[in-house]
Image (tube, rainbow, N blue to C red; front, side, top):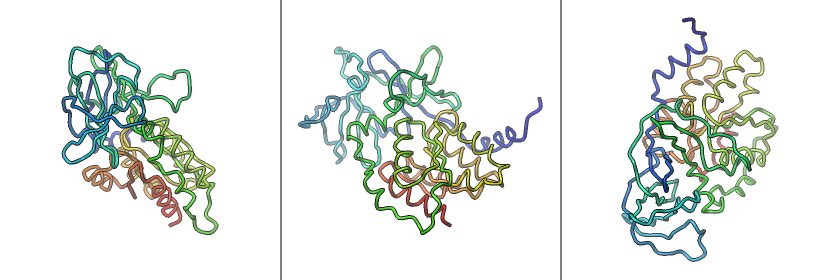
Length: 308
C-alpha cells in the first residue's frame, strides 16, 4: 500500500500520543450518555440537598461534600427524560474550573476505552447549532452513546457569566497590531466555539476560522504549508483538549513536528487544565494553557505571542 507523506507524518506523530478517551458511560432514564472520565472526581449515591431560591428548574440544590459546596443538576430535566422512581439515583461529581457540579443520573454502567477517532460528530438537527447539548457520538457494541456538552450545561446554569465577556474591552494590543491575521479556533462544543469566535471578534480580530475537531483543523493547517502567507493564514491556534477524531494534545504534536509550522503560537483553552494535563500540554509544546473562566487572559496571551 502506498501512503503519502502527510499520512506518514500523522501516523508517526500519533504513535507517540495516545489520542485515546476513557468515557464514563451512564444512563439518564433509558438513554445512554457519556462524559470524559478526566472530568469526573467521584460517583456517589444521591444525598439530601438544600434548595436554592430562584435557581433554574434543573438545579436540585446544593450540599457540602469534602469541605466544598456542590451544586446538583438533574440531567433528567436538562435532557427532558423521565426519571425512574424505583431506585435512588447516582451523582456524578465533576469539577469545572472553580465549580463543583454533581449531575443526577439514573445509573452508571462503567468506563469505556476508545480512541477519539471512534467518536463522531453528532448529526445535524433543526434549531440553532449552538444550542446542541451533544459534542460527539460513540457506537459501542449495539449502543449509541451521546457525549454531552457539560460545559454548555454548566454555563447555562450560570447564565454564561463564567466567561466574563466584559473584560475583553480592557485588552490593549500593541500599536499597529494586525487584527486581520487568521486565528484558528478548534473546539468541539458548538456553543463554546461560538463564544470564543465572538470574543475574538469583539476584541478586534476579523479573520477567525472555526473547526470542531483536531482532525479538521489539522487538514486545514497542513494545507497552508506551501503558502507564501503561512504566518498570515495560520497566525495562531486556540484549541480545546478533548475533541472527536483528534484531541488537542495530538494536534499540538502534529504542528510542532512540522518544520514549516513548528513556531506557530498555540494556546490550549479547556475545562481540563489541571496539574497532570498542564504538564502534558507543556510536553507536547503548547505555548500557554487556560481554563474556561480565563477567556480574556487567553486572548491577551494570543496577542502577545503573535506580536513576538
